[in-house]
Length: 436
Image: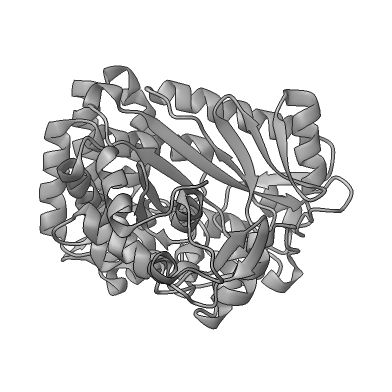
């Protein structure tokens, strides 16, 4: 019989997390948008569609499939998984590694496998944070039960919920913490740097076939999804404690529950209510808690590790440079202290600052300075940390150093390419120049 949860048991579980610095690991997640070469979406069921790609990964590259009913929805291999986002975006969730070189090698292999599969098949793997051409209504849903509930629930609380679900793409990174105090410092730093992160990787300026007016339309979509589960919740600010974080999660309205393998709408009931009162005589287990943790989407999230979630999908070398940057100041004590001081000077990551980063990227002015200047300070801090703690990985920072020296978000280059391709009208021209 599964163990019944209590609030105190969940808090105690968080206190059991953490590891000494010598056991620190880095995990990376990369979402990828697949399009036809005319910019149209790739459906799950169609010829050379998403299901076919998953089946090819199994047949040609040794991934193990997981099914929901008759449909493959996830693949597993060597501690990594390949899963699906609601609009058919394919995500690699990598294994935890000690070095950035291992993260790079795993990601490169995954990208190479998908590129080999789609070669000659009128398919394109694009390095963008948002599908650029078609309205969201034309992107088909993948057959996953939780997404059916989410697509009905989330639009009640945000007019861009379906944009976020079906159209967006990002990269993320996961980091260890030593204990509650160390977790608190890292969460304070990463939350405070939220606008800088968004600006550095703002790469989604095209929406439904025209410039949106935002360099990160993906970031904008998250602000208009569900404020109860997105952004920078109060538990991320000020005096961090695992207890405050657990109470935040307990009080977020649930979207769904899964009972005896079936997905159900939770009708806004909170997990705390479920613990106390049950639902139709059923009480939650640890697996239910772990599922609930995946349904809350702040810019920085804590499970057994810290997840940094605020970046648009960008070309792989730049994404790896970003993860290297976070590693440089999170896993070096002196650099973390410097980053903490920088955040204290920068000030709180308010919704207004976040929107400014979404709109103007590195050219947004926050705290009296351009975000490009704050980013330059941060990259310099990380470079010093890497030079001390991980000198062999210092060179992987090069793409982001070049970016901040130029002072423009990657989305600015996307807009330039868009204009050079006749306002995006020459679709093959545009897509060929924004490939991974």
